[in-house]
Image (cartoon, rainbow, N blue to C red):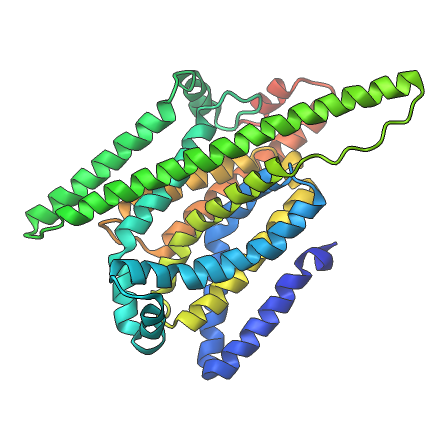
Length: 379
């Protein structure tokens, strides 16, 4: 099972490290290995959240996620995306931007760094909306009940998540402009860019998430109708041919996953410049890491880990909220990538331990209620 799920990741790792060694010797080999570890540590929460969505898809779409999705993640976000950002921000053609990335790495790094406020605003708003919609939803299983119970009541207010996200964006852009003015800068245009990029992130979330939710509801209705028809056929003694459900729901969930992965990858791409500004090594290292994140996602789904450890999804969403805040803060303040990675790891580890304690309490209580078990586990 392990080899089957992670086989492609092992193969990509071997090929990537060999390519790095041929490209730049043992130094390049070491840099690619470090970049892969960085990507995995920063994106573990991504895998947990992805698993919560991917478990709703069939084996075909899981395979698409591991093949086409990897191509989008590796070549699209880790290789093409930084070049596109440079081309747009520097107002140059794509070929010129590629030439800059390969032959003038310091200038390329500077242009990507200059574009960071817009990137962080877009990704931060998208991730913040994911966290807010999760935390404001009333759910049967609650992890940090003292936080989640009152927030679930607040969540009954329509469009509360959007309002809070917009307030955060306005405060961030205003603070950015004020900070620049106080230091003698003229960053009004950049503050406007942050505002526009943040709104674009919010719109992207609402469009993609809305379509995904709509088609998911349609899929559930179709499954329920099919189940009723099967029961009717069983009662009448007739054979009912299997119906292949339309792939619209799965497609939009796949699209949602790709946008989600893109938002998660922003911090990895930016953080990679602290290690190297060689676009080839960045693509190899971050690509290897992205492959492991995807394999881990599928592993969590097939093992039913999220069903066994029910607080994992909560921990991952809290990590998303933390990452969203960190991205917004990095618009004008530098935060070490180690801190970014550790926040996610700590929250997920905490939620995993809480899940283990809950399972032990349930086992000890026998047929006791879940609520009593949670109280006895100290959560």
